[in-house]
Image 1 (spheres, rainbow, N blue to C red):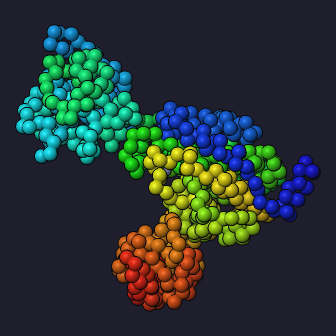
Image 2 (cartoon, rainbow, N blue to C red):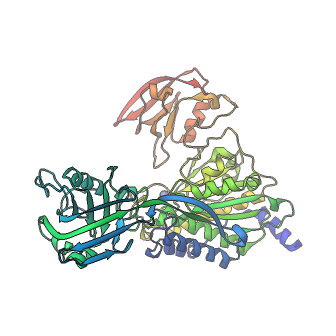
Image 3 (tube, rainbow, N blue to C red):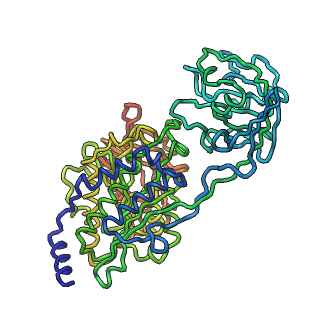
Length: 580
Ligand SMILES: [Zn+2]
């Protein structure tokens, strides 16, 4: 015990930076972004596998379980998308009286927004791709009254993409009372479309629609949809079979799982304080939510956020091996982030007592793409202690981009909004954000280890301090100055301009994402893409410069703002306001 304490004191005195090896982070990043986990969607089998993997890694490192009932899992309810209800059926009767039954989720699946608890019966008519453009018309005035249209999923080669919703509306307009879409739009698609709004039909009162596999339709009717697909313009034809289709969809509810472990502190008093290191491990599956490409391929989420998850696992192993932490360090890997910070919100709501004792929460979300050493660190305004802590942390080769605001788009927000000091580490946005291109091959594994090392060093610095970090009630929780109400502390806090700065990839000045509605900035005509170069006579090279410049002005002051728009420099006078 005594030796331990001495060791801890020595560690504090030397205060060297932590070093986490590439081998302690990269393999986790690679594993979690492999196809096995299918994009780690919350409530999906791949998402569950990912949770199991993470829990096993924490256990192997010697981190104690911090979830429900002595497990590593903290459960919380999630409602996302739809699933089949009890009442779905599809039967086909051929001209010779043979009846073939389809099996739900194997042979067919109702499309989202299909009439619930309604049955449609009718002759099946194949209608090609089910389009009726001037350039490509499968219907040519056909009357489908009392019939059910069968159309190929997807679009003809070289044609625009066409949604199931559009095909349903066309079939309905032609008199059809139901629709079957058949086959895969792309070879990489799953056999049946997902239960998401994106692949459903529109709101068509009483209209019944489902997807079927090509294999089932061929077996049931002899009609080979895949062969038809190879024709340059598949010809409509009667299928000599009638169908009875009944659909029922219900909201998909289940339990999400945060994975939580901890290393108890060794100080009899300080061990009651928590330092939380967190990252979300869920992603968007096959693009079920928030895909930037619309693809149904696996969205691997190597950077978002297998990288942050790997970072937390590396940091957990580092502290478990090193020991000597005075405070309790908690490792939290959240699910449901991509659905709206569900996991972190659930935890923060469930444990207000633990939040009270939390010194800081550090979030790692997308830390796998370090480029030119640019590391974005948000939330520096949430505690007056951050500046000193960050100055003490060695960051060789890193150009830290400090930002006072927390942003609201990742899990640290669940904590900052409840008065916990936060930092959010982020290596920046990229073209593969939320699409199938976010793969492990593009991860800067050396950079990932560097960021993890920096975060571990920050944790050490927090642990070395004599007391809990104070939360700054005036801090900028959210995306912009002015998001949070509070009593004004100094003139800079009272001034409202309404710039909404863009923190990603700025090289000079302050790039705006927009201007707050009703603000002086909006009235002065500022808009997204404007680059603020000078404010009240001060040249700006960062958001911190802007904050500094704002310190010097009072509400009601008229200040000159020089900015660049479309390559042209301009100047405008703006009158600041008192913040509400
Ligand atoms: Zn994301």
